[in-house]
Amino acid sequence: MGDQVGAPLPSRTGWGSRRRRSTTTRNAPRPGALRARHWRPAALVAALALVTLQSLGTTAATPAQASSVPTLSCGAKVAHRRLAYHAVDYWRDRLWRLYADSGKGWSGGDGGASVSLPGGRVAWLFNDSYVGKVVDGGRPRPEFVHNLIVLQHGPQLTTLHGGSRSHPVPFMTYKLSHHNWYWSNSGVETGGVLYVSYSSYWYPGTPSVYGFVRTGTVLAGFSLRTFHLISFRWLDNRRHIVWGVSMRRGADWVYVYGLRTSGSGSSMTRQVFLARAPVGHMLGPWQYYTGSGWAGTLSLAAPILGSVSSTFSVNLVDGVYVLTTMSPAFGSEAEMYFGCHPAGPFRNRLAVWNTSSTGGIYGTMGIKGAYTYGAILQSQLTRGALTVLSYDVNTSDWSLIDQNAGIVRPRYVLVRLAF
Image (tube, rainbow, N blue to C red; front, side, top):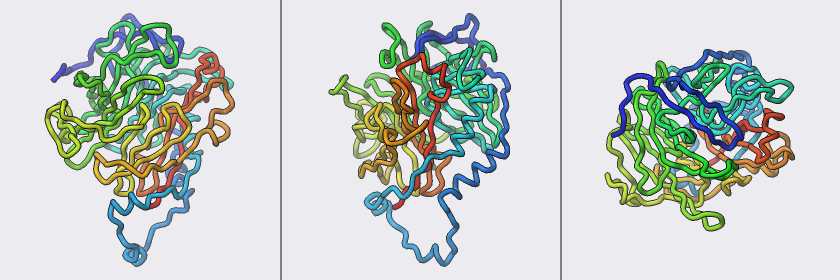
């Protein structure tokens, strides 16, 4: 079942990233150790909650209106899905930009999958992140970590990482060899524990944008009170499936989506797989979807979809399961597929946002080597058919990242679907 950790654990962090340098430590702190860096843009957050919905002109239906609208089956919704509205989420963008520029913690990074926690809190899982001050739009002395968490509680944002404020190290470093690191995939809360899927990587040669190699995937459990590591399990890698690329909790089961990549270059293929664990028992035996049912044997797992990028999410939007990804992996088009079951079938592709036709910071900004990737939906921001899409912007010219702190930050887009 893997190691069960009952107390904060010592760890080591290594070198290697999509960035040219990282931070090492001789005596890395326990996972979850943090410096209190609270940030409260109260007026902005209050306006954000109101404007996000009002910007689309949402109004509540009267009982008479509601009863006169026929209820569509899920199959009919999938057949008639369309994009009703999309627009840059300027308010959410401004929220994160002000925090990133405040010098209170996280100043940029990619990923940013969100996990709803009890008490109205939200854990934002970031990778390849920068910590510290932003001066005149740049980072004069950037500190870089491979993973961290920003904890949101109402208007308060707090960055969780190891080490100290002046010498931060990644939030998650447990059981790593010297030259390896973790990137988070996604997370879910169940049984009073925050579970996060992390994949470990290393560079077999000279660091480059695409030169890293995955060495395994783990499921880490963190206390919701202290955010210390309390459980750790290496996930089965025999079929080379990255488990936990997306996770969502249902009424009785937590659904864990995995990704298997085969081939390389133009012959590369990616397939989505699905497993499930009982709610509250993530470390118990898993079941795997076989194409027609569930089995307790990994070898019987069958793919449920192909043609996705290395990042995707599965969310429930207005009663329909929506798989969101970017096409191609480092392309410019965010797309969705729709289904009526956690396993799909996912079909009726719908393009919802194109970064190549978007100007300013929401495109590639005319910056040398810039590219977009990592499109996902944010479940905890979904209300009915209204949801929030996020994606990442980065550049292969690493010298520009310190000069322009705004490059490596997620972008947010309001999306309203119609069924």
